[in-house]
Image 1 (cartoon, helix red, strand yellow):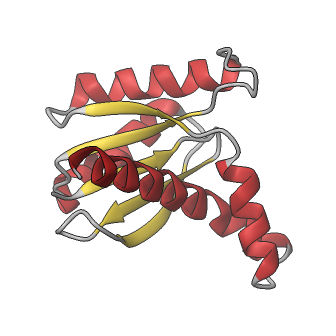
Image 2 (cartoon, rainbow, N blue to C red; image 1 turned 30 degrees about the vertical axis):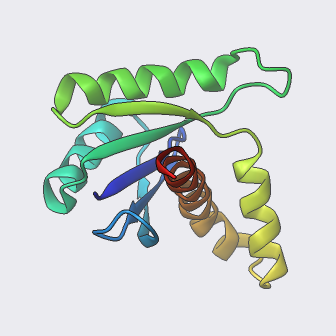
Image 3 (cartoon, rainbow, N blue to C red; image 1 turned 60 degrees about the horizontal axis):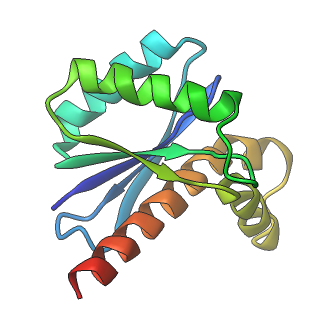
Length: 140
């Protein structure tokens, strides 16, 4: 089962795809767009090309569990995807994935513009890894 994970952002959206078996992160990329509508179009093109069976959208709740403006934007993005595709779209809590992505990139020496260009893809891969681990534990 191929899974697509998305870290939705206002200017850059990270996308990660599992391998065909749905066990590992197989591919990542970043979509650059300033409008939700265009980002939805580009993600739908990727869906047609990559054929995931489920889409996981990061849902960045506040640290206290409440829903803030960023989570509301992600929920609206997920709903827009649901309207444009037949692939199931689920929201998954992704608190601190972007912070973790910055730490990972810093640890491997990525700085400045190079980090900015890849941090969203790394965050999407963390969302995907967490989802795949959760599914593995649920099925075990």
